[in-house]
Image (cartoon, rainbow, N blue to C red; front, side, top):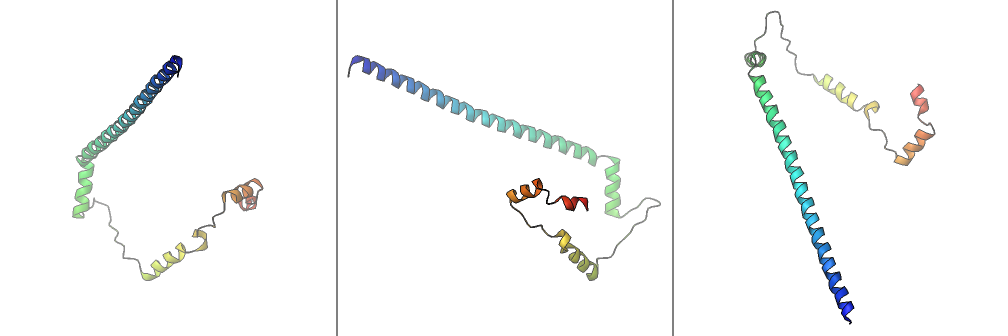
Length: 132
């Protein structure tokens, strides 16, 4: 325990405390910057939503929308237009749709590993399917 050792230890403690303080300030600045960026994104999102609502309100005030709304709610048509009312699907049509949905062409293809897919690609296993 010489004076030089004590001075070196005190200098080391001061340096470590300075480094620790700098790191804590840098972390705090990073957190504040992250919060600021989040607030900026939220502000941009709110501005976009506001503009969207303004455009929507302007559309609701147009004659086009008013005409469509009146025609839709009252069932009116323009001269020359015809209304086509379709009946509900029959059971046979529903069965045919279900049969199409369960056909093998729509079924899920067996999932191969990434390695097997690369080997098939590199060695041309699927090339004959492309030429057909």
